[in-house]
Image 1 (cartoon, rainbow, N blue to C red):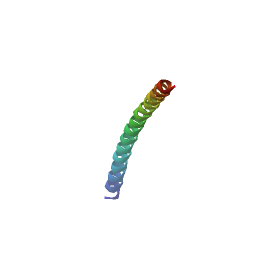
Image 2 (image 1 turned 90 degrees about the horizontal axis):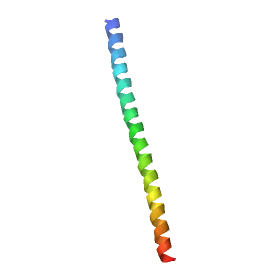
Image 3 (image 1 turned 45 degrees about the horizontal axis):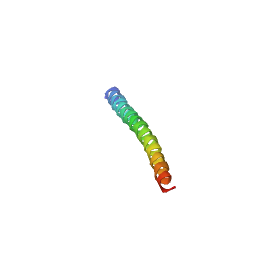
Image 4 (image 1 turned 180 degrees about the vertical axis):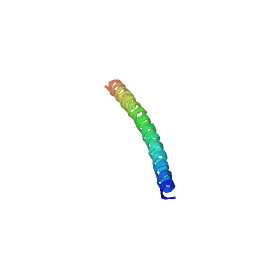
Length: 57
């Protein structure tokens, strides 16, 4: 029974690690896209700011 318990704990830990790895992988993917979107948003905001200042001047 001890061996079965060890097998179950190892299997559950493996599943938890796999799930955590997948979640971390998705988080990295989302964070990467968020960074791209933020950079694009900052560039667009900067361009709009320059146009706005240019129109005022």
